Image 1 (cartoon, rainbow, N blue to C red):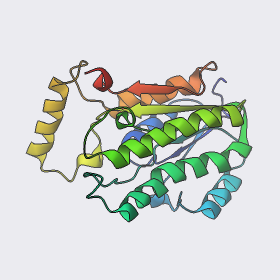
Image 2: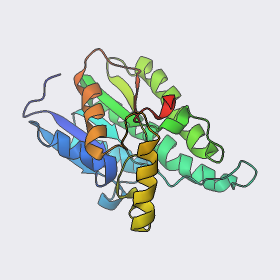
Image 3: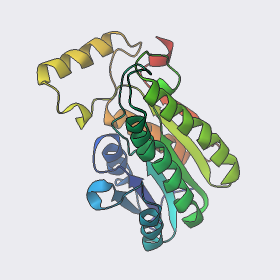
Length: 223
């Protein structure tokens, strides 16, 4: 599907971080880009909010969901299940609900791109909530790719990316974390939002890509 003046894309989570990078990349192309997030009034935990939002936009071509959640870390015995459920409500169930309510409005040949994370397939003690949540997104997207066809469904799985998610850290500690990560990655660097945006554009543009999980993690899964 070529981009033209009638192409409509929606980026949920597009006001910050990776989503902002994707929305900025799409904005250089013909067509219209709608950016939505909690800060714009869209609550992806609320099905009525999603239904009304997509109805208000009308026909669309591409949906990108990058909205995330602050998942609790810690050993299984130490994490409160209610806190884990809250994280799932936003990233997992919110992503699924967004895809569900967007699908009837997407033109044939259009796409939905969800976001997981490299911990879906990397065993790291203390991260079971992120692992379970991201793995569930990847597995569900493959089911969606069959059920929603000919809409194409794909997942981008980012590794450590330098975004404003770490803005609350002490700057010296933040730089040290990023530097240490880069030294231990085969790519020799951590991700930037522009690195990740290129991955989303790839799956949007490639008409032969559906049901895929694209790792953009600097080699974290092989290191």
